[in-house]
Image (cartoon, rainbow, N blue to C red):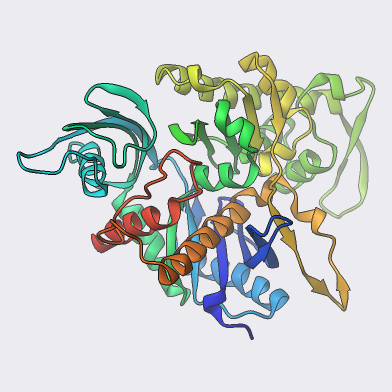
Length: 445
């Protein structure tokens, strides 16, 4: 077995499935670190509803099964995981912080000044059962000069920061932490799933000009907007792909199991993809096929109505936050719900802007099964975006920690300091800052 300190594990705990991705550090053609996936495990979610633990024993069993499947595939030991945070309890907002230099301080902006401004921005009013989980700078002002991404060593006596803050339910986080520990795994970090999605599916041009990422999960739909390397919006709509299945079952008087099979195998949510003459035979309980059939177009109409509702709720939430102004490149759909044919067409009708399906990128695959290499293309699939993105974040953290050990990080006071290149890619330098914020958050547990 390889030393567990040399690997990273992304753990995406969803409403329908728990997915674990084990990876290690590889290099691309330019010599830059890149994730090499060496093991993948999946397990049906049990004891988990809309990103929240409702039964610790069942949820722990699902986590263990997913991770152990990835361990058996990879031949690696696992000690800790990078866990995704999702669910309706996760909320984002933008805030402002300011710090003024004291008399006698040197005139240049220091890391400590930047950290103080960020702490000021994160100092929102206390709400029962809620705590600040993640704070990331959007832009700075030095002496009222705005649009600054990195004010370090600039001259000025007043520093302001606009920051994006993500808060979460403390009880939900405690239950998740306890559930993972029951599974006998440590926690390397806890990361909002929207940031992991952005890490795995976006190309630099999209991230720079402004893009919305919509992760359609089974129970919830997670939304993130990024521009110029910063997050401007994080939100959650409390419905997802499972509601499409429920609607098909309710309207057509089917079991949930049969409705899911119809959705996966013959489903679509845009009429342009369906021949009006197509029918679907309904299997009987015995497993044989009866003479009952339904119109495939009818199934499509049911699915489209629910997907239209999901995207309309997303649009309303983003518009209420005045965040559509940052979406200049278009929309990227990911998550298991993005596999339903026609989903991008429905999104384009709702938003009136370009939409594409987001498959995870920026990784290699080295997996053998029964003595044969597995084709890595099967993991370039929207349902793996979260887990792969979490593993990529974990790799960033490992690489940054190794670099810090080799070379002193001048000016950094502690692990709770934020990265100085705060505008150069949303997750390029997030490792140290995220590690510190997670440690601080978890101390409250």
